[in-house]
Length: 131
Image (cartoon, rainbow, N blue to C red; front, side):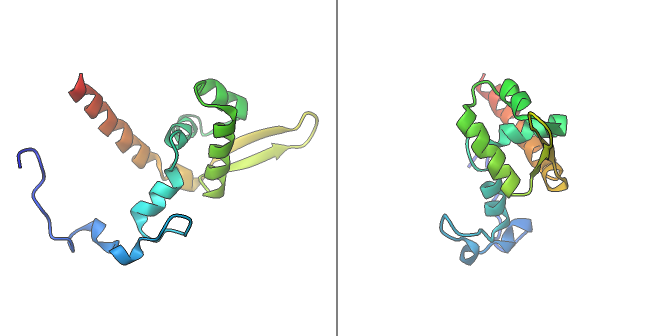
């Protein structure tokens, strides 16, 4: 086929260490590295929330809400909980009244920068090819 990479031996390269036996049904802890990444970044808005953290390093709920105005409060709260649970961001609450909460990108979150950058580059090329 024109425009497609040549077929590779299934046992070649860095993607070979994920046999079918590593794939698990939804609701179970993934073992395949690609599946682990998808589980961490899963959800329509999750990569965009992560993008904001990669740009800022830290943010308040209000800052994220302003940066992603199409995102509902419920979905933003869910995505922050998801990224916190995955160890991508940390939630820090400052004592006092009113209490203030700030979310900070962790080293694991920062390690996702090449993934998000690759998504940006692929999406840019795709958008340009379609226009």
